[in-house]
Image (cartoon, rainbow, N blue to C red; front, side, top):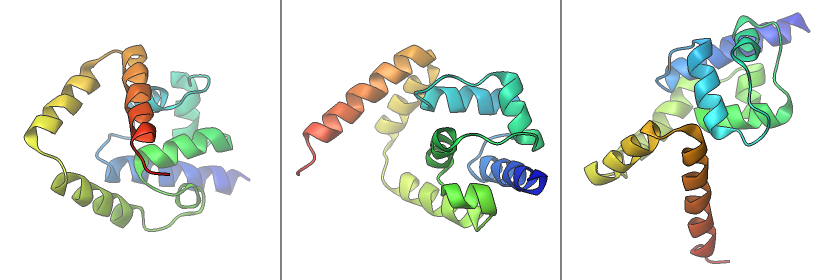
Length: 132
């Protein structure tokens, strides 16, 4: 089981780097907690993930995989993380203009509770305007 935890830790660090984040506990805690709707993780808890001493449950693993743009399997068992993130980033760069980038930068400066509210509003509009 320790091998699985170490494998996860390595994959998590690699995915964070590929997505443009430093693989540090403070970065992981902040970014994870802004995206996860369950109980927030502590700095100590995410540090244990990065050290390979513990693994997140499936719900937390899903949050990590969505944030980092990799599958749960890739995080758990390995795979081509760099290529997946590069493809996602290329799609992102080609589809967004400078005005939208300004909005995203402003969004990222907001406190976590306000980000969650705005995220919920955007998701609600998306559901309302998506054909069945």
